[in-house]
Length: 330
Image 1 (cartoon, rainbow, N blue to C red):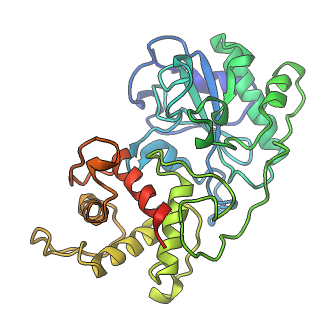
Image 2 (cartoon, helix red, strand yellow):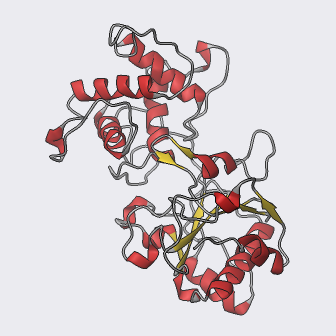
């Protein structure tokens, strides 16, 4: 089944809704049955959008990211409290879960715009409550099955604070009507530490890292820190400021391409095809990264018994190798 009534449900709750073009036909598959769970997330994007966008993560949630194709949730929630209806079918948002009823084929995913450490606007939190309540009521989902990503992911350390909301209080608010409070444990944002090695470790910000093959902000920040410390992710390259923000965008990819190029991996000697530092994370860049990681013992069958191929596919095996390298790099 497809959830083609999502927009109607949210509007029926008196909420502002934007229907993203093509949402009714977007999804990796049909739901096998009525959803059993609603999974709440925060996007972990930057604390403030450079262009003032209400929902700057829209393109990522809709289209995906390297190694994970979109949609990554059925619904988005902007800082203003506006809802974005992105997909009617299955989306990749849960990862490995504790029960089947919590996985992608049985769960509605909501990605709310928040860095994970910034304060939640009251209007956004109130809209989150009203929208989730309307969805749960419409699909017959018990409020006890409204869960944060941090509550369903396996292992639990994979998403320890997503979303940065007190979920017990949130579930209680679905019945009481009171606006829920942010999680008391939400930590203030910290500047990245001066790096001395171990880029995918708790040394960076005190949060434990897991080698899980998920190219999330923690992995990208580790890569940015390493490239920054080596002089590749810096303003001196072209005069443009760089931020360790967990965004795997063009500036980060260019820095990685230069790093690989200077080590002889992102060059035409590999296969006779000329390489360009263009910020495009395509198969040529991925192959160069796979070769680099393989030659250093990170992208090999010895890690877990699974064969590795230099195929240009930036999937979980390659991401795990990247995480393993960043964990040990100095």
